[in-house]
Amino acid sequence: MHLLFIVLVLLVVCIFKFIHSVIWVPWRIQVYFRKQGISGPNYRPIFGNTPEYRRLFSEVRSKPMPFNHDIVHRVAPFYYEWSRKYGKTFLYWFGTKPTLAISDPDMIKEVLMNTGDGSFQKARNNPLAKLLFGQGLNGLDGEEWALHRRIANQAFMIERVKCWVPEIVESITKMLIKWEEIRGGRDEFEVDVHRELQNFTSDVIAKTAFGSNYEEGKRIFLLQDQHKYLAYQAFGNVYIPGFRFLPTKKNRERWRFDRETREAIRKLIKNNNSERENSRNLLSLLMSSYKNQEGEEEKLGIEEIINECKTFYFSGKESTADLLTWALLLLALHQEWQNKAREEVFSIFGENESIAAEKLNDLKIVNSILCETQRLYPPVVMLPRQTSKNVKLGTLDVPAGTHFYLALPSVHHDPDIWGKDANEFNPLRFNEPRNHLASFFPFGIGPRMCVGKNLAVMEVKIVLAMIIRSYSFVVSPTYVHAPSLLLSTQPQFGAQILFRRI
Ligand code: HEM
Image 1 (cartoon, protein in one colour):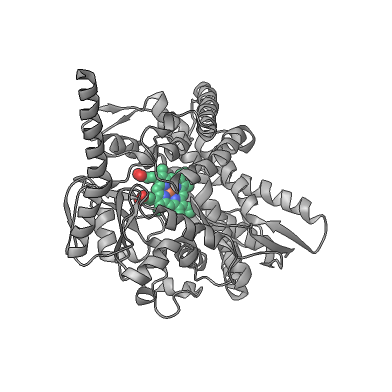
Image 2: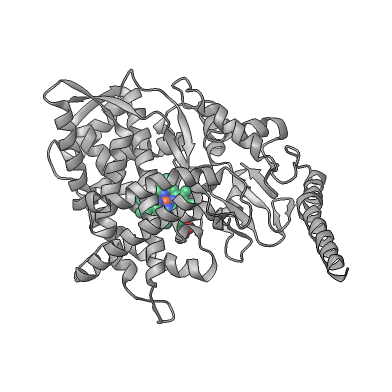
């Protein structure tokens, strides 16, 4: 009788807690925002608006689009749909998580710049997706993040990155030799550049960062590629606490990918350790100790290094390959800009001169083309943040625990910011100074800005210069335009381009 009573009390407490967190709290938050003039799709218990969110994504992915650059409805279909109904700032629900979608550059700037006192922290990753990146820079906060960031900043300083030019050129040369084999003496040949550039950026990150090459790092990239699809599924689903410990088929695969990736990286570290003298790769720099401002020694532990390696392997490969792919497609479509870029490359590097890091800054037209590419096709569109306390954002009172969707693609395509031709490819617009820091932020802004930006920018300039110098190119008739979000903005059916040797 006594036991039955305890069980009953526990049951009532559980039901009460469930109703409180799944119905009462979300309902109160929704009312709180509505009173401030912020509406959005109605909250639905447990799953929030996730089913609708997923439906919108699968709908756009089910068909291609005409070849224009108006892609917000494809890479952020939920933002496109709901902002038209509820206004540019609205509230939606990812499970029981309230998420404030914003596209006002002032608000975005405040969120991205204001991380110091924990007002707007990096949002916690879904634990299932976290396995892909490890627990590296991307997912850290506070003091731990600051230590990792100080070390990574040193590794990616522009002077260090410039030393990697020979390795980058070697990787491109290897890719172009393969292209010549594909050409086989013909006038014209077709390449799916997305696939090729992913191999190229993998090779670069394997060499520059870890002192190995694509072949040695291949196992890690293959594992990460397979893991990527599972992580992507996890991002689109509401996470049920404890689910990651259940031995479901997908979880077991996630565990295996994680275990094998960590093992492969551990091996790489061991090899690197024996060749460390004079080594200038990222791994050696991650393994070194540094003096901080107080003169104290700082050093990462082995598991922390493995986590960072996982992060760099993934971040260094995907987004850089995406940017290069979209840039080549845009230049294949806009021949006048391809010609202008080629003239500039010839005038600075001649026909055969080797590419010198010092001269890369002179590539002004190439630079505007790359900026315009990132404006129209930003590779990274998710910059997740959450509040750790009640904060004021503009005129809004935002309660602790609110998540943010910063509508980067929408800002980059906003006619109020970029004019009536916002969806057109016009690199000339980057000749004018920018009117707002948060009107264009493909690498993020503020303290969490991309740590690999120097490497990425240098890499894409060199590869574009070397391709443009060797080939003229047009879009292949087999190309199907379907920009899609798969963790980053990618061409869903590849990027087929026809090349002709100059
Ligand atoms: C075109 C290529 C790239 C783009 C567009 C890009 C974009 C971004 C963006 C937007 C962020 C900020 C995310 C946020 O604020 O939440 C970021 C962070 C980061 N990126 Fe990149 N990235 C690129 C290349 C790279 C490369 C080559 C590496 C390393 C090899 C890298 C490593 C990282 C890391 C570790 C972070 C997390 C920084 C932190 O939280 O402190 N990225 N990137």
